[in-house]
Image 1: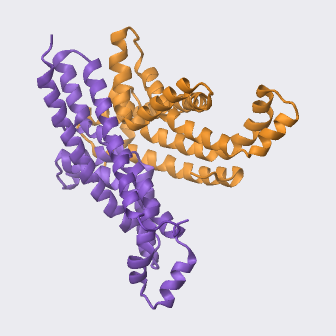
Image 2 (image 1 turned 120 degrees about the vertical axis):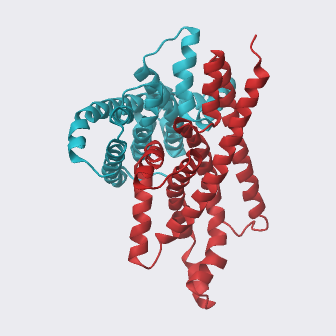
Image 3 (image 1 turned 180 degrees about the vertical axis):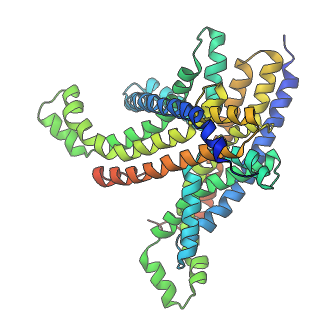
Length: 219
Length: 219
């Protein structure tokens, strides 16, 4: 079967529709993952043993099970208990929760890497807990986390095709529907692959720059 | 009241397929990891370039796209694969690319003095690698290999989308036949989690076994 450029031109507008949804899902998922991760990291540091244990176990469970099954769970099981979500929302929640458990580890490492002396100095300066976090710990903990967080956001971007399984019309789903309509798989699937490869090669360059700018943290 | 025992049998069959995929994929991934990881450290530019291209390509595109490419596009190029073969191929090559970086990092983490000792003992490049460097590097690789194996286990859920009857696929079958979503999906989430725990336990005991007698030698 030969590569057909006319066919490529014909399907390109449809695929671009899908690219928009893919990027939207990645951005929303990243924001959610960043927030969920912070929540998990803070809960695990909580002095309340019951809370930190429970959150730890839940995070471990989410990290040990496949994203695809979690997406099915959110999309097909939650309606049974009365929560009906549109596909894109379900997808973003799935991505955000799954990657939130990974970003939680990044936050944990970032916070642990702030030297003890900084905590003691904050106490010596009579700063409250709130002030210590917002003025001393967070400003020092965030920059080294940025490359590692970006790494997970790129990984999430590469997982977005899974959303096609819960009928989100992102790039992969558009490609599949085009392929099924014309019964030509070569061009749509190859274009999707090329698109992801192009974005990840660009993001590798971006990541190198982030690492130089903000310094690498241990993984 | 639904007759659950029959459906549970279905899910168990799916679990066997998932385990089979994970094992075969891991073997392929291990082979590719050592080929590509050592290839990146080769003296020959051609080998280095080939290994880098492989690693960047498979890390840059998502597993989902690779699987669809293997199953739908390769037959058009004259390579007919069964769903199982396509699944093992895509999973093995994908995770192999990630693990190759682990191999490279571990080999590079072995100190200079070990390389110098190899030269002093008049060992050839291959002999030194085989008897001195790799046995030490392998211990460094093991924990990350465990994480890669869990990633592979989680990625196997994607093969349900190319009609391979794994855990996720069987859960969909049970859902379609009983109309119940909660029970099958919760069951397979738990099974995936148990399998992930098994992998991390196996890797940890292997590590303990291999590190025996090395106390005080390793840093």
